[in-house]
Image 1 (cartoon, rainbow, N blue to C red):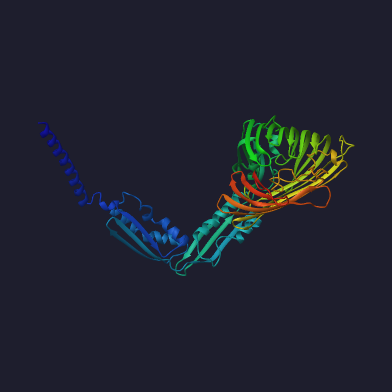
Image 2: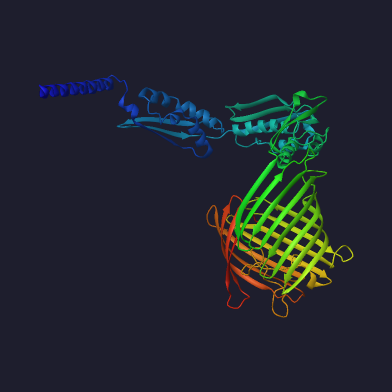
Amino acid sequence: MDSKSINFENLKIKAVMFQRILFGFLLLFLGIGSAWSQARLEVEVQGVEGKALENVMAYLSIVHHQEDPQLTEEQIHRLHDKVVDEVQTALEVYGYYRPQIQADLQQYPGQWLARYWIDPGPRMSVEEVNLNLTGEGRDDPAFQALQEDFPVKKKNPLNHADYEQGKAALQQLAAERGYFQAEFTQQKLQVNLEAYVATVVLHFSTGPRYRFGPVTFSETVVRPQLLARYVPFEEGELYESSDLIELHTALVDSNYFAEVEVEPQPQQAVDKKVPIEVRLQAVKRHRYSAGVGFGTDTGPRINLGWENRYVNRRGHRFGFALRASGIRQAFDTSYVIPIRDPRTDQLAIASSFGRESTRTSDSRIAQLGVRRVTARGDWRETLSLNYRWEDFEIDGESGTAKLLIPGVIWFRSQADDPIYPRRGHRISLELRGAAQELLSNNTFSQFTLRGKMVRSPGSRSRVLVRGALGMSLVSDFSELPPSVRYFAGGDQSVRGYAFNTLGAKDDEDRVVGGRNLFVGSLEYEYRLLDKWAVATFYDAGNAFNDFSLDLQQGAGVGIRWISPVGPIRVDLAWALSKPGTPFRLHVYLGPDL
């Protein structure tokens, strides 16, 4: 009985399978769920290229549906029938109004092939451009420049995209320069199919130009009086949206705010003056930082820091940092007060306590000072007054320096890319000194000029040139502390030599630093891959006491990885001026400029 039962069940299963197969064949022959609906659909277009081809493919419905797995034979034919009209519309955008189009649709086992041959024919040209400006903008140099360089020009081939781009440019310029009532009084693109020419008619009324009204700020952590000093324009000045972008950038860069929104309110303008509303959301008051790194000059290093970003509503800041490396350990504090233009100007009271040990010297340093930073055009000026106590040992001799040092630094940096510039430069000039008559136990004056330049002679290459020149006048050089003497050697000086191991020597051939400095470097870099480059370089320089230059030379090769925070440089450099030409590995991370 069990055997018969099993056979019976098998027969039932087979019967069900047979019914399903038979039903599938019936659907196939009835045209329901046709097998061809699963066939691959190929589309070929010939005769046009470039942007015209891209536009044709964008317009073709059959292209957009060719991957549809549910596409039926009826739908394919319907899409095919639309192709001629769609191609004509796509080509008209580029001025082709007389195309010849051949269309063919073939069905093969498992495949549909749609082929289209297009002869675009002659391209229509622009016979006349009637661009008429009225209103105050007619005499605006910005509108005059746009009118002179309008995308649609007489005798040029017709391009509808240029026409739309020109219209958009007029409207955008009006919005950027405060013509809030601007409008087209006439706008049309006339196509004459018989003469096969086009005429552009654009009459644009700019209306009056608005001015800046009052600027209001939402309640926040700093006083409105400070915020007002970030505003780069005065009430009543002609409106320009670039000034609002500058205001937004300045408030973001102030580090007081996590979110900044600057909104003009032209609908609330009074006497053509647009009020500006600024909404602010403060950042967290306290900021903590930590970082680790490595350099062959410093060895392993660690930085820990804390900052109170707004001590009070006047925007004062206070912070400290602990820095430790193989050659330097320091604890720094600073209290910063924004002054005048807070975007660029500040007054800072700073202190530093630490120790610096190199192969040539050992110092314990305490310093307290004040500095004022001011922008002067493209230059940044830093005036400083520091009192430094330095207990040092060098050349087997020890001493204690007490110096009140006034100084000034002028600094300028420009680059086309802050991370990996292909063109740019930086330059700094520092003057400082001390006098025994002014709370100091030594008298000196010092001039230091440093610079670096980057140029790109080819699409994948860069040339980097840097140099440093320093000169000192000092009454007693032996009492001058190491932090004020000149040394050379290291990652950013003459490679192939250890940090600060080059300088004038004493009678026992020990490096003691120098009154003067001269260093130069030439480097060629070639980028092999997007983030990788190789380099070769030559460095020369020294620190010396007279003008009989004893330049120490170094040369080598390196590899660069362009990281998000600047290139990581690994250099193998040979000390050419040393007996046996020993080599040294240098590792450095940081931006070029």
